[in-house]
Length: 284
Ligand code: C2E
Ligand code: CA
Ligand code: CA
Ligand code: CA
Image (cartoon, rainbow, N blue to C red; front, top):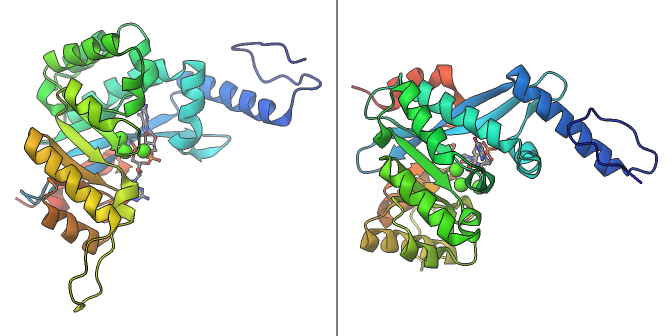
C-alpha cells in the first residue's frame, strides 16, 4: 500500500497506481517550481464598451516548467489547491500583480483570481494589504475575482473576509457567473462590484447572418440579457468573458454589457507586452 510521504520527491512504491505516480511527480515539480520561480503572470485586457478603452487587465498564472514546458493553470491549479501550495503561489501572484500594475497608467486596474483555499488560510487580508503597501498600488486599482465555490464555505467567515477586503478599498468581482447553483442568492448577501458572465454563455451567442431578418434571441442571449439587466438594477458592472468574434461583441454592446474580455480584444500576453497593448488599444 502506498505510504503517504508529503513533501518528498516522487518515489516508486510497488502497487501505487499510475495515476497517483503522475500526480506525485507533478506535485514534486510544482513544489520545486515555487522555489525556482518558474511562474509568470500573463495579462489579458478588460475592455470597457462605454469608453472603448482598456480599463484593466486580468492576471493569469503561467508555469514555465523546464521539464514540462508551458503548463496551463487548468492542469496545475487543482493540484495546487489540494496540496495547499496555492497559498504561497497565490501570495506570489498578488505581490507580483500589484508590483507590475503599479507601473501602468493610473486609470488601468489589475484583476487577480483568488482560490477558495486562500480564504481558508490565515492572513489573506494581511497579504492583500501588504501587496498594496509594498507596491504602492492604490487599492481602487486592485480587483479580486472569486468564484461561487468560495461562497459555499462557512459563510460567516467568508462574508467577514470579503467585507474586510472591501474595506481596504479593493473591488470584488464574481467570476464564472451563472455556472453554479445559487449565484443569485449570493448577490443578496454580498455587495459585489462586478459580475463576470461565464464564457459558456458567450460561446453560444449566435450572430444572425448578415442581412437576415431579426430572429428571436437564443437561450444564451436571453440569459445574458437577464444578467445584464440584473447588474443594471443592482448597480453592478457586468463583464462578458471569452469574447472571440466581432458579432459577439456587437451583441453584448447591444445588451448593455459594460465590459468585454476575450481573444477578440487580445489573448493573455506577457507583462512586457502590456505597454504595447495599451498603445494599440488606448490611443491618446
Ligand atoms: P478564469 O479566471 O475563468 O480565466 C479565464 C480563462 O479563459 C483564462 O484561461 C483565459 O486565458 C481564457 N480565455 C480568455 N479569453 C478567451 C477566449 O476568448 N476564448 C477562450 N476559449 N478562452 C479565453 P487560463 O489562463 O488558462 O486560466 C484558466 C483558469 O485558471 C482561470 O479561469 C482561473 O480559474 C485559473 N487561474 C488562472 N490564474 C490564476 C491565479 O493566479 N490564481 C488562481 N487561484 N487561479 C488562476
Ligand atoms: Ca477569472
Ligand atoms: Ca472566469
Ligand atoms: Ca473559469
